[in-house]
Length: 288
Image (cartoon, rainbow, N blue to C red; front, top):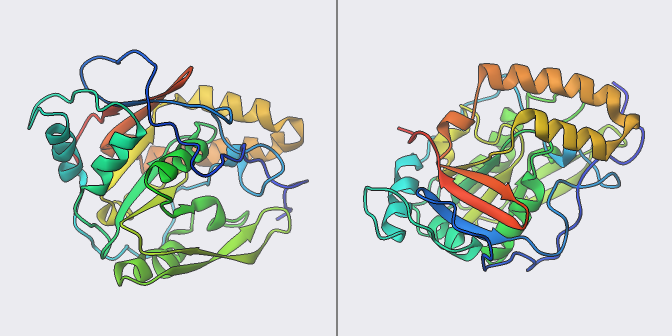
């Protein structure tokens, strides 16, 4: 399959430590877990000029792959920890105040993948996962981020779960550094290497990060709450006509994936992008 016509679409690089910790936005009302101002780079995914699928977000979809090593189920723990942190055990969530508070909540969860608290950042292509996860990683003190862009490929937009299990989840579950192959979207080949140390919190970012076979290894699932049409429109507008053919293929594939294996209903928290930051609310359901 042909590669991208140029370095793949992606998003603005966010300097390490650029994650803002204060929230000049108004509280979002009951259920708000955290709000945070977004300063520096514009909110969105990586721009054309870095490697990856449309919108700078990794693809995911139906497809095989081995079941991840079972880890402690973290959905209920995540919601309970948020209630406790907000001072309302078992009840509605109060405002925590910013990314620092969200980071503290995540760090207080029980490990879910060996010694690691694996946190998924999922959402539609173009929904802003890349920038949000970069800022959250900085608020976590430099947490490793595994980008699903690096594990997917043109030939396997969705069938990356076996690679994820063998090269990332299994090593982390045993307290070892994950070393994985990185796909070059311009050369259409796995030419690089990535690493993720078994830090207290590791972020897994990309479309389908919260899919069915990954959820047993997650401590928490964050869903970017931008509607599909809005996210896709933003991604297509940013990437331009040169990638319109790939976007056509991509949107069909993403739609099929989430129809078969949705993540949003299982999200512990939903992240909504605001004009100057983010709002984090508890998800609709708790994972069993």
